[in-house]
Length: 270
Image (cartoon, rainbow, N blue to C red; front, side):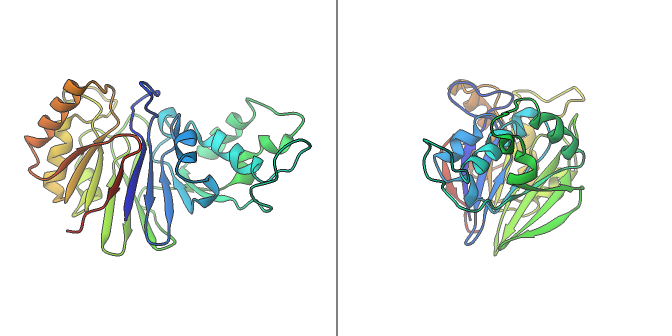
């Protein structure tokens, strides 16, 4: 199992870093976890979106799903032939399975109509043609190729599910956005790699729901994970990131990584 970090910024892209997006490769399956601003471009440097077996979205904040629309338009345009343009990349459009929280279809319907292409109306049907949309509920589990994906409701101002991907003997657990909650321990239990948001430098005292480095380290320790990767940074200054890692290391004595766009990680053998 392999993880490619496409983007790791919280909120909007900054400093050349896209927002949230992570590509998971197993022996036979490619799954995109979240698709924030900048991820459509970052993904195109690694693979074409038609190569994806599925996309799973943790929650419907813009920094985790904003690039679904351009990604859908890429999928459609790759199958179109028009005068003066290149040959189609593919002759047949295969909708990519898209797993999203309940209520997403209504959002997508409004979203797709914002930028009409009147001369090519098919491009305005990204969510009808490019994706096979499936709304999930917390606790759902489904098979995607040789991987099993499980959804765990966590703590955030907008409903968010952590995503657990299992294939063979390897497991990645991804928090999406969350505050401190016991549910993170179940999400991450015995995972080989925990991809945990660490948005803040101090504990979140609000109802919004984010983690600091120490929170992520405690989750990793309690869940017994093999390795911790911190992500979803609101700052990428080296001193700030070093302090974030040190905060996590005060709670977790295993390996700790800081996510970097373009980084490829082989999920370790426990």
